[in-house]
Length: 318
Ligand SMILES: CC(C)(COP(=O)(O)OP(=O)(O)OC[C@H]1O[C@@H](n2cnc3c(N)ncnc32)[C@H](O)[C@@H]1OP(=O)(O)O)[C@@H](O)C(=O)NCCC(=O)NCCS
Image (cartoon, rainbow, N blue to C red; front, top):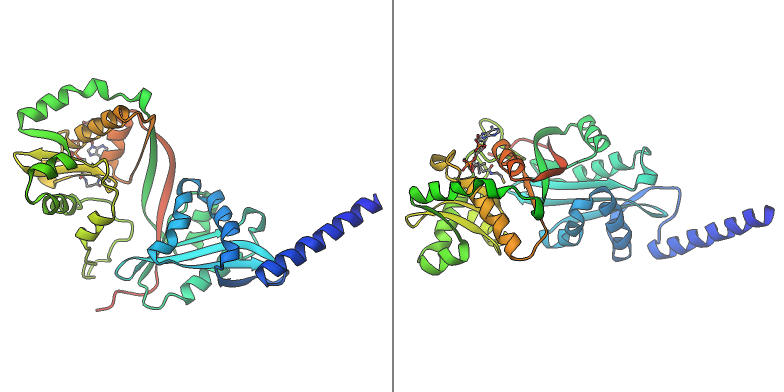
């Protein structure tokens, strides 16, 4: 028994000095440092364990211009990131390794991010787990909306019952076509697409809304469209004018054209196209009750729900 215990101690010491060598930081004192190259693998694993649906975002964080930190206690025990979304509105991630929770590391990481947030109006977090939601509530974050993540097994899609909808829309001169097809026929396709995306923003649930009396944060819609995944974008076209779309930007319909089945038709066409490409599942995320209703009607099932929570750091600059 003694021999085994001693062997473990020797192993722990080796492990400790190995990690100290890699990270250059001691055990027994949590320190927050900029995320270094050698810490990335461990931080990525901590992030992925907490947010399995967002794994790819860890690598993408640098392209978003995120500032990233590690909480280190001999090894990486936590990770934080902060990046600008629009104007002075920022997004954050705070994740503590499950084995190191309830020791105040999350609060210290958050304090660190806030201290580094000069010129920031608000911080938005997107927790899923109940303990993460409670952690943020205690620290002044309030819920702004819920984003429901849904998945559809394409073999179980229920779009067949709704095909007569396409005939009804055709009677109103509305057709669902690919954005690529529309672009090949229209001179101002990009401007039209940007215009319908911007128009559909009316009523779109906003995760970080401006407060009453604040001037609205301007949005560069051309940039939003340029950065989105439009590979399989579909649009609803009525006599040359775009009235709706479904793409990496979500699904939207011009306010004056809502309630006629256009979003339903767009999603049916998107499902058909995914089946034709040989795909087996389709994902969707929405905070809009009508869109959630449509998705459920078509056979999507909820996978998880992200609560969008915002903490104001200061009021808008005049
Ligand atoms: C959500 C949106 C795309 C719906 O477009 P639409 O063309 O009006 O949708 P449809 O006419 O195809 O279908 C609407 C369905 O939602 C239902 N609905 C409407 N309001 C609802 C609500 N508050 N709660 C639940 N269901 C609702 C309607 O009854 C209808 O269902 P039914 O056909 O079974 O009766 C449109 O409102 C929009 O562009 N909103 C802003 C953008 C947005 O938030 N998009 C979602 C983010 S991905």
